[in-house]
Image 1: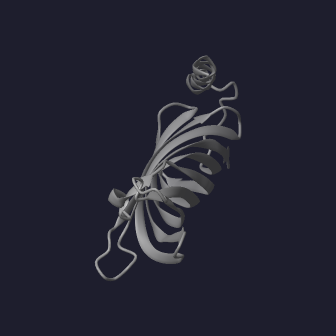
Image 2: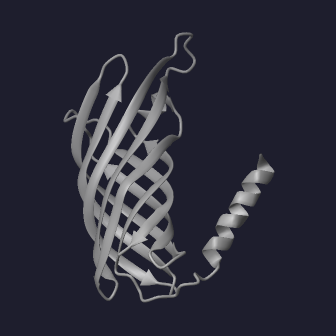
Image 3: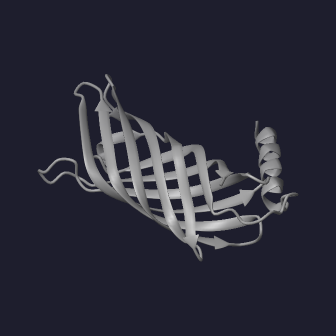
Length: 192
């Protein structure tokens, strides 16, 4: 298993560092999808055993208007499984789903003709849905900061690796906790 993982990493790394054959004009926009692990902080994590969740970018789009400045939008979701009171004989499991739809400014820095680094700040609603013994759903305003590396592998196709941090204020007005969400995502982007 370790050998197969090393081979897969070597192939992926060689694609990233090898210049694309088609070095064409710079593209101003992209639409991408991606998947990766997600880590949840807050939401009374101290009283729960939190497993690593799965994060999916259903839509990650951006467009550069002028000298690297542009706009970025993201629509994504993540899912987690919690084990409450892990030392108890009857372990209660709950599922937490988090969805985001955000928009904000972006700065794109060209590293070469085929690679760029993007920095993004976003604002938008974050929805938290918990299913277990008691079901609840909350929506609140949140913000996000992110960075992404994009490497072109064809005229209109690129590989992306990104790291995102989402922060949201308490979803109950009685002084509950704020939550944070850290996502590491790998995916593909179609260049416009």
